[in-house]
Length: 484
Image (cartoon, rainbow, N blue to C red):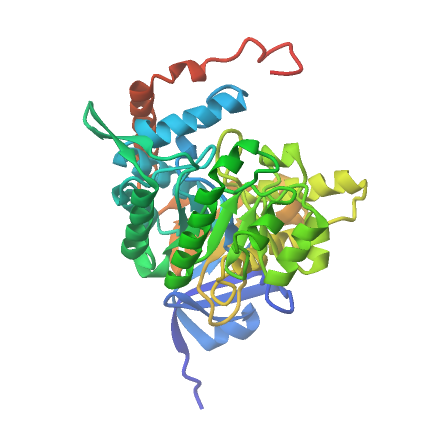
């Protein structure tokens, strides 16, 4: 009796499939069957190929097949402010404040989001979290149009994204500006207006583009023990904690914060009630035993950014957190002032960062750091049942990494190859929701040249409006010096 073959949309065949499934299977000569936006089957090519007929087949010979990588902490806007200030972090932070409040228009946010999404998909990062602003917690939340343009660029590119919205750091009102050509109009924005903008963004954008665009909630970290000036705004921080925690609950959103350090997680739990299973807190350097205990008790997740400036100033105790039972994911901290969206780079940095601290080359095995950008990262953002591993029924977010390159040879120990030696440029194919966004390094969803040209124009326009050209000059200590 002739067996009827099931027709599927896409078959990835003859690759080394690193599933990150519960058994952590690594399948040589493996295959992944995709139908619609979901994975239908995973196994050996010998098992799957005779049972399916595919509308399209990708030959993964000499390639690793992985779940799409997940970046759990970054910043919208940063992509057009790379390296400004030439090593002067205070100048760069001030540039962020100026650009995000008075120097950017809707096209800036669209062009920057398009650039960031393009970099991510070319590096195999299929899901990313972006706070809608940054520097010292300055957010573009005076009007929902800016977020709408950001989300439109993500939708066009085809990646998966979480946009985190919340108020700028006190005090308020803050001066923001809108632009109509060369005409600038200033207006003061209160915390009440920021809240209304955030809710409007949630209502208009959350769940968009077939569920690829999602919104989460953020707040500046309250840390009077490290920043004495925060004490005068204690009432504001507490009121905002109540308001935005309620906002996250009402819309069933994730909650994240940027910049936790010793003692602030315990304070956020005891005084502000912000920790919980929907919370993923970033940086988290120099944590106390009480901070870690609060994360364990509440199910709070931690995002480690090993390449960030905060990780120079202090250490996120990743091994200690994991051993205590806390989920830890990795983040890039964005692509400025001196980083990238290449999560392979951050995996490598993570391993060596903590091995140097403990003087122990056995700390953080390669499989663990791969989990931190796949299944653990999915768990951090509440999507572990949808993405983060190659399993039947999950969303088809898949990448192919070309292993047939000098720096990745010989073809053995594939988990070690992708965590120690691969980089974003080795990603040959990126698939999100079953849709091929890039094949053989050819981006299929957007015109790559157009994205780059738009980003350059937006950056040039921003510099004209802000007068920050001086921050592009090389400092006199660039050469022949040991410190900026």
